[in-house]
Amino acid sequence: MILNKDQCIAIVGGTGSLGSAIGSRLAKAGHRILIGSRSAASAAAEAERIGHGAEGLGNADAAARADIILVTVPFAAQDATMRDIAPFVDGKIVVDTTVPLVPPRVMRVQLPEEGSAALRAQAILGEGVRLVSAFHNVAAHKLAQDVDVGCDVLVFGDDKESRAVVVAMAHAIGLRGLHAGALANSAAAEAMTSLLIFMNKHYRVDGAGIRITGDLQMGEAG
Image 1 (cartoon, rainbow, N blue to C red):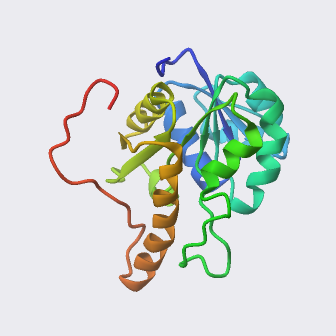
Image 2 (cartoon, rainbow, N blue to C red):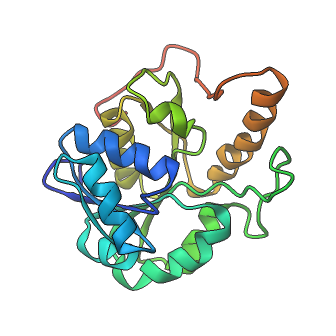
């Protein structure tokens, strides 16, 4: 499976800052986008704002119609959202962007008992889902602007082919997607978000990201 413009991509939680930014960039790049939300009316309004043929639906309806599903909700909403879409995602690629931030101590790493938010999602959705974890360390407000965000996207998943689709998705929205290994490795990027929030505050940075140094030998699949 490769990423192509005939596939329908649902952004579940697509009215939030990260989902809206990713959805906008994918739509502008010519991809078929469904914006999902708990409120179908809110999703429709966001889809109209994005334009480029985007449609708005409730989360479950968006997941049912899509070939690929991105889940872009806060950690507190992850469990309920995953259970909402679970009946509609078997055999599909689901991209979980969840970072386990637990207010008020969001600058402290607090991984869930499963080991990572990604492994938590896999347990909820079941083994029939091709789960990939990505987009943890991207500043959503920068992604929403028409600028070079200048950071890498680490992509995790146990199925290399599914990872390659999401690596290509990162490239489609102007970022460099990189294979970062098994789904369990997602814990590293999830934890890094709390470090970046601390560094943003300590060093007065407007949305720090990460870049992998070195002369990477990039093949067709990233």
